[in-house]
Length: 179
Image 1 (tube, rainbow, N blue to C red):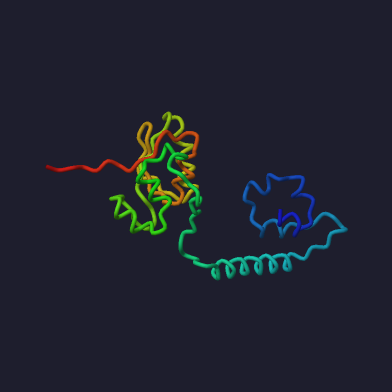
Image 2 (tube, rainbow, N blue to C red):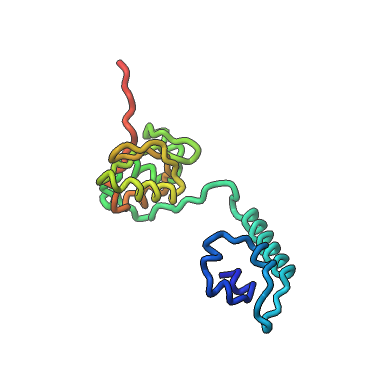
């Protein structure tokens, strides 16, 4: 949309496939404008876009924490009964204020801001939907088997994941016990 406004050329409006084909800005700007009423200076557009990119980078670097994960917070009034598809220890972790400390107390595998979970699915066909949801919530898929996915997810996103329509249950992985 910014390119359409900045370029002022009707050929992009009438040919959206140019945008879908990842045509570079350089190629588009080098093509002569066919309308006499539009006077576009490609160098001004490039300079404007460059300044816009620099401003976005500077604004991103001056944020509260540029290299840490920003996770959605659990609702203040969240109740375990509202999340029956989430195992109790994981609900406790998702609503804890000191997540790393609480994960240690609960014996959960917590590393680099992510907790290891097993997401059980309703059917094997829903694996792609749930994988996409996990990745959209900044999770990392470790293993996919039939109707379950093992993944590392930010604890604060567990409540959102538990509301996914294709999720049957979310639990911590079973740990081996040796005699």
